[in-house]
Each structure stands twice: as structure tokens, then as C-alpha cells.
Image (cartoon, rainbow, N blue to C red; front, side, top):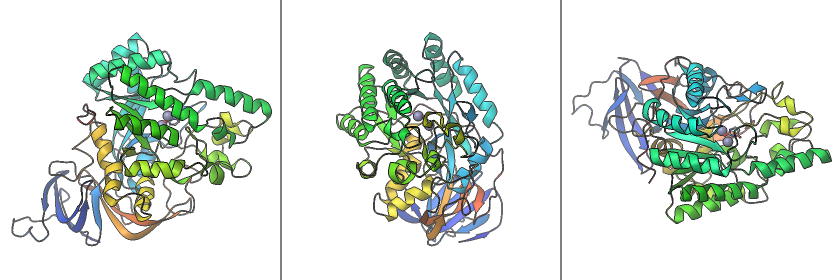
Length: 479
Ligand code: DUC
Ligand code: ZN
Ligand code: ZN
């Protein structure tokens, strides 16, 4: 690929293969003032009088919409610590990996007003992001006040999705009655409910028993969060969403076959149920990662946990992605350093902050899924760019290469390679990589955000503060 410079406000991408969820075609893309203004059959630019500003020759490359990662946690408090990427470091890392939009979470603590938590998250992000960002709202305290505030957030703040927890008693946990009430309110508003579906009450019993036995190493994190309890919670969440009137429900960070089966059945029966998985649940396992000797396994403590590769979860999740039982791939990027952060749980796995960092690598890891034959090229774009934008009220501004859309574009080199690791490609603020040593097919070559080139051939050319807040609309794709 070569870039010729010209007017910064006008960008012409020629000779590439445009890929969408529906197919691929050879076409040229004209971007002006941050938007896509024309998509032209190759060779038609001259006839139509298109005079280029800056020209990018994308011959032999895929041209895809910028990645949309609808599940990240920058600067999120967890126990006594805070996730290690700021909105600045995390959004720069995302850009390096071809993601041009994130949706993070504003978190309501018990007793806090939803609006105050949102203000706190705006203060963390505003002016600090390299790419565009939005927020979902976590409701940690379902009561009359927060139910009323949900309407305010939808009507005035561009927040159209709300996350609830069936895990973490005493922190973010909601009981079934609270969940039902929040779902009824979301249903009235036309908003989406996102669910962390693990049975936290039962899990806490298993954790206490494990620690009492002296089973304190990181791998017991997975053994005390059995997949059947993810399946049970998913079943219950779906049942409650049905009782609330077929309210749109989105199961986050799915890791388990049992949970997938529940979603597949509900979707088959026509209910408005969606789910995402994350690369860690497709590539990493209890045996190879969480069970590494000593304290190493702490690097991969996240909830839900990595699953056993003997139990077919990985295979089933790949199949679910292919069949649209799983709609989206996000990262649940929630990074903590091993030193001083994960080490809080040296003698007690339950004190290890939960989370894996991966915002930089989602597009790369999922492209490997194309090369390995798990999903098609089109499905890669659909699950990583288009559907997340559709489900969360960002489409068609984001997630598509269409006239009028934001010029968020990735130029992808299908024959290049990407080596992930702390001494290779690694821009997240973490002292290790969860994907250390992986050598992947394909490479992010150029990343464009609203018409500005922010990554080009291993150089960051973006600007902190370029990223705008994205107020989101209610989605038209939930019913
Ligand atoms: N759930 C998340 O969505 N992210 C990090 C930890 C968790 O439990
Ligand atoms: Zn969660
Ligand atoms: Zn999360």
C-alpha cells in the first residue's frame, strides 16, 4: 500500500476489496470531511470527476469498517484497584488493533445516583480518547430512583443499554425481583438489558469451600465457577426477559456451552435474545493458561472463567458464531498488571482482580478464525463491526462502509502477519500479554477514524482528544 498526501479533508482509497457482512467487492472509497461520500466501481473516479486529496492505494488489501468493541472497561475500580488502561492508553491500543469505536461502562455503586456515575465516567473519558466512545450503564442498585433515572439516561444522555449482574453478591448483584423490575422498565423504554449471567450466590458457597480446603491457586477460580452455573443463570435471565414481555436481552461475555444452548433455543423460538463471546473464550483454556505453575495462572483470571478444553466449549462457541447464535465478538477488555494488581490474590484466588486485557487484538484474533475456517470473512466483519453497531444504536454511523457513514475504515493486509507479545505488538498498559507468543495471519495496515489516518504502517498518527462521545439511539434491530 502507498499513501500520497494531499488535502487532509479528502481521502481516496483505491483498488481495495471492500468487505461487509453481506459480501465483498472491488471498489474505491471517497471520504470527505470525516464521512464516506462515495463508493465507486474501480476506474470510475476520473469519469465522475473525482479529484483526490490524499490517496491510499489498497490494492491487494481488504477494506473494512473500523472495529466496534462494545465491551471494555478502562479505569474501572475493582476491589482495591483500578483497571490499568486509562481511556487514553486503552483507546490508543484499540486503534493499533483496528478498533475505532468502543462502548465502555459507567458503573453505579450501591447508593449512588445513576446520573452521578455517568458524570464520573464522562470526566474520565472526555478529551482523553483517541477513538470514538460511548457508554452503557451498569445498574448496581436497582431501586425506585435508579429505575426512574433509566428514563433520563435514554431520553437525554444517549445511554440505551443497561448491564445487570447475577454474580458478585454485595457488589453489583441484583436479585431476580430487581432484575425483573429493571427489565420491565427497559421494555417500556425500548432499551437493551445486558446480563452478566453467572449464579453468584452458589459460586460464593463454592469459593468459601475451596478456600477452606486450602485450594487457593488461580485455577480454582474456574473450578468454583462451573459452566452449569453460567447455563443456569442464562436460563433464568431469559425466563425473566420473557416474563417482562420479551424484552431485548444481551448475554455478555459468554464462555460456556450450556449458556449457548439456552440462547440458541430462545432465538430459535423467536425471542429477542442475543449474546456475545470474547476471544479469550475461543482461544484460551483452564488447562493451558489458568493452570500454569505458581501464580502465573492469575494472568487469566476473569469472570466468567476460562473453560476446560476437554469440554467442547471452544468448539461450540465457534459454531455458535458461525450460526448467529452468538451475534457479537467483544473483548471485555479489563486489564490488570500481574505485579501489584493481580498479586493481591497471591494466597487467595478470590482476591485476584477479574479481567483480561485484549482490546488491541480482537480484530487480529478473529481474522485468524477466518483463516482457520471457523467463520467467513463476511462473518468476521459482521460480528466485530456491523452487528455490535446495530444492536447498540450506532448504525449506520458506525459499523458499515456506506455513503453518509463516518469514515472509520481499516485497511487490512491479508498476507501480512502479527506477532503478539510484550516484546512484539503490545500497546496496552499491562506488564504481560494474555496472548503472548501468538503468531497470527493478517495485519492491520492503516486505520482511519472519521477520515483521519490514526495508524499507518506501525506508526500511531492519531491524537488524544480526537475521540468523541457517541450518544446512542435506541436500536432498530432488537425485535
Ligand atoms: N464482568 C465484566 O463484564 N468485566 C470484568 C469482570 C466481570 O465480572
Ligand atoms: Zn460481567
Ligand atoms: Zn465486562
